[in-house]
Image 1 (cartoon, one colour):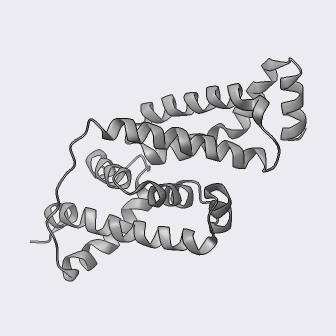
Image 2 (tube, one colour):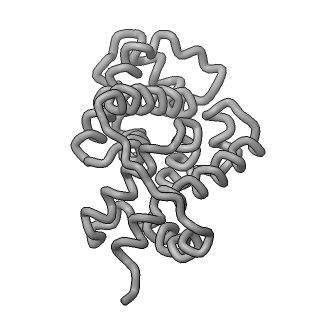
Length: 195
């Protein structure tokens, strides 16, 4: 059964069928939420919020885009709104300006760390630093990075979800990586400097 057929059934009154949509898209929504927050519990709460909002807005789904694209947008908006609310109460870390040599030393460690941020064996403090650095990125950069790294979404699909060009996605990903290198350089310098 297609998403559209399932939505018609749900809207006709069989609201218990909504669980089928939740089950189908839960892993995707969780991965996106997890990319925006440090703690798994916060990602669980965000995911629940996304599915409540989606259910309430289901009647307004106009089928101009695929349901998955529409759901991606609701998920991203929910995560970004959460981020805005939590940022109001947080203090931002200050980083010293580092030379190019320090950035290059940290580049390899940083790119490995992004790929391993959610692996169970990684040190919690290390993963927390990476998540916090990702959370400090400008919204569009963070969105593009989360969709690319956590959801392994192709740039063309990211462009559709974000309603921008593929070239703009490439630029956002490039800037996000550069910003992460700068943000994490001091952390790596302090914690991984060889004697």
